[in-house]
Length: 265
Image (cartoon, rainbow, N blue to C red; front, side):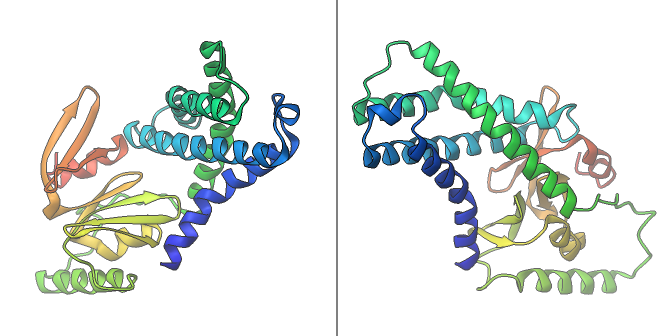
């Protein structure tokens, strides 16, 4: 619960702060159009809703695009901002109408202004988060059969059991099912299992080391258990793993050689 609250505060803290500042200074004429209380409510609502909306879309774009995409730090946030501009314009239009400012007469111009504002926010935020992840996460070393020391089957099984026990000790209560995959979100991991999903504070590198031979890292933001792979799908230049729970996990280009060597692709 404490980790969930900490994660929620990281999600809501920045938009709340930005909304509070904008509510006090009243940009775009809202200082004269709205009284203080209404102005604060307006900006807190608009910024918070659109921030979370853009954050969700940017994360989806980040998961879909290849990890080695050129100029990724520029393309991902800008593409996410453009995609989020349409629903965000609807949020702003509704807020204008409900607050008394009035419904927009030029929706196209408003949409452009919203897209520009979203781009100005998502670009530095995404760049900062990406830099934080790179600083705290050392480069992964490729795991191949030649680089692994020779161990007996019994020893390998014991190491897997110990590693799984060490990883499961991070949870406040026993997992409700078999681990299927791990999804990285900032400094947190969403552990998807046959009984649902749980979030823990853990680096992907630590989790993959502890889980060892139970699965493989398939993407910058994903690890998948061997028993959870149900099939492989290809969409143009993208490769996707289909899991036993019908979840579809993207495969990063830099991870394909190890997956091919393991017989996954």
